[in-house]
Structures are given as structure tokens and as C-alpha cells.
Length: 360
Image 1 (tube, helix red, strand yellow):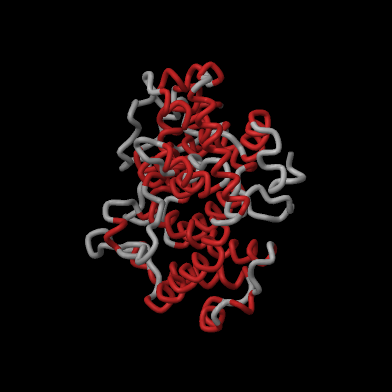
Image 2 (tube, helix red, strand yellow):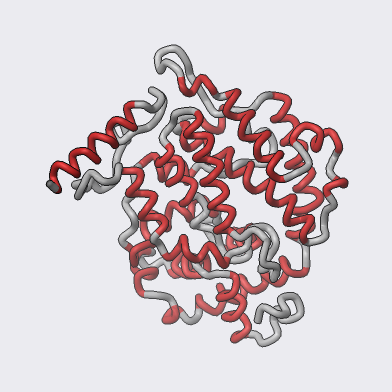
């Protein structure tokens, strides 16, 4: 009875994949895992397994206490790194399903794309980049967590397409919609890359308003007229435009070279919006007293741990092959905002109490 039931489930999984676009990545055409594994059962396909492995990590859980844009906010409704990740996954799944692409692969990439973020958001990332001999970027750290750090140094052994999508999700400022940036990236990876942008730029407007840095009426009128005044309107406009302009992703594999894209009008509009947000929100936040204190905290933690390596978990030292700097950065990256604040306060009382009053 059990074998018969499992066979039905397996057949159903195969049937679902057979309905996908010929451009989709499936369990059959994946490049697979670095370390081949024998699948224990047919209840889940390989990308469902990857998604589940990510969700059940400590790194994923810690995202709930890591900043998105506004550093260690006290308000209950500010976006955290975890809620941002959930929004990216939701938007990605909507686009992927509409285009008949692999929803499970898309979701796995979305759930893992920000695992490598440090405490204090991009401000913490900037501080670590200045400290690290090799430089630091959260997308590379996400891959490092997946391949080496999770499971006490064993890694998660995910499929190639999941790791590649996570590695390449970041977007340079400027013409980041250009096709040259996504050459060789799966359509599912491209969806997460653009969904990440949709999630943060639309939600950051809400958070900036909540923080008193922005009034919706301050946004250029031409942007509001095109993408909408309400959050739901903005998300819907961007998502439907992508689906409409990427419909060839559902087509014949031999007759097109599809990619995930927006219309030129909307690209121009959201590029203008992104530039506006950088100038009026992101740069002011990165130069705020909270940001300056956060960078100082990262510096203090780094110096202290470099001289007190016994505090670093053994597995972090082992996976770094004796590179203490790398181990220290791995340890700091894994900290939540609250943990980093409290640790820093034990080293330098009142270090951040004037800025983070109420958090300590």
C-alpha cells in the first residue's frame, strides 16, 4: 500500500514538471549537487528538498532579527530581512507560476538569497567590506553559508541552479536590467533577481514613510502615475508588466531566447525611482548616527574577536583552514542586530545606548 501511494505521488510530481515551460529547469535537467545523493523518497522533488533545507537552517531563522534598511528599528511594522525574504519568495512564485517556470526552484533561490547578510543591513556589509582583506559581499557570504557553514561546517549540498541564483541575485546601481547581467542565469534565477528589486523598492517606500523620512506626495508625480500610489498597486503594476513582457518564456525552446524583463517605459520609471530612493533614503540612512554607531560596533567586535579567538565556535575555525580573519567575519555575519548590540555593550558600555535606546 505504501509503495503504491509513493508511486502515485512520484507520478504526480513528474506530471507537474511535464506541464512546465520547455525553458524551465526541472529535476531531469538540473546540473545536480556537488556531492551526489541518493534520493530517499519521491514525496519531494530535488528543489523542494533544497527549499526545505534552507528554511530549517539557523541562518534563515536569524533573518527575523536582522535589519533591512532602517537599522534595528523599534517599530513592529518595519520590514526585517526575514519579511523581505518572504515577500521576495511570494512575488517570485507569482511570476514563476504565471510563466510556467519551476516554482520550487524559484522559491528555493528566493528563500536563500539573503542568508549572508550581516547585522545592521547594508551598513554592516559596508563595514565588513572595509575590514576584510578579500572584501565582503552578502551574496558571496550566502553561498559560503550554504556550501560550508551550515550544519556545523557540513553545508547544505544544494543543487547548482539554486546556488547560482543566490550568487547572482545582486544588482549594480545603474542599468541593472540589461541582458548582459543575466547571461547564463536560469529564468528562475532571473525572476528572483528582479523580484528582490520589486520587494525592496516598494516596501522601502512604506518604511521611509513610517520613519518620517518620506511623504508619498514627495515622490515624483510621473512615477506615481505609472506605478501607483498604494503599495499593492505598485507591486501589481511591476509584476504584471514583467509577466506580459516575458511571455515568450512559456514558448517553444527552439524558437526563442527568452529572458525576464519589463517594458522600456517601466524600466525607465523604476530606474528613476531607485535613483530617487538612493539619494533621498538609502544614502541618508547610511550616513545617520545609527549607521555610524553600527559600523563602529562591527569594528570593535572584529578587533576583539581577532584577539579572543576562543570565543569563536570551533567549526568556524575549522572550515576556514586557519584563516582567523575569515572565521571572525563568519561569526560576525551570523550575528543578529540585538546580539551584536549586546555583545558590543559588554566591551564598551554606553557604546550605542544614545542611538539604540530601548534596545539594550
